[in-house]
Length: 144
Figure 1 (cartoon, rainbow, N blue to C red):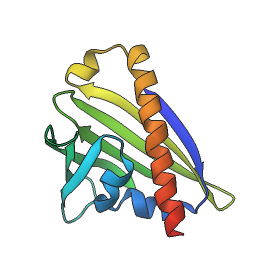
Figure 2 (cartoon, rainbow, N blue to C red):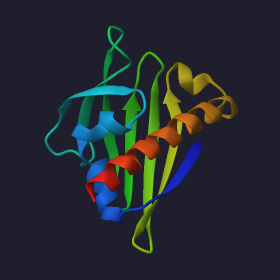
Figure 3 (tube, rainbow, N blue to C red):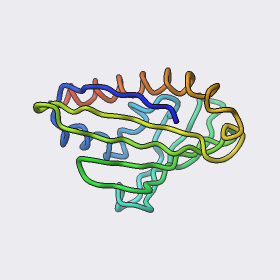
Figure 4 (cartoon, one colour):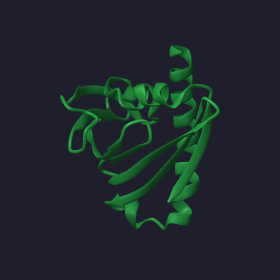
């Protein structure tokens, strides 16, 4: 499982405000190009964001589903990006003196990407998720 972490200069609730606003998803998730719809009830388990992956004209419409959610502490998502497959992504937040220490974990769980050895996949996911957390931090810090 690939793991990244970042100390975000904002309180945990501010970070979760962005994490759980489905309409901001494409602004901070590397690879997501647009959000087409956010189901009512998001971020409760079972609810989805309908998004597109890639760049025009090669856009692929797919979804991300909430698997677990504990407000201001934990968010687990099932992300789909076919034809590469599906992944499970977790965000774990802890307060560090009024700032948010955010850990992001990701692993491929289905499809072609799940057949790639984790040791080969981790460096790619790590690079992508470093940028994902950087974008998330910029969005959060701009709003505070």
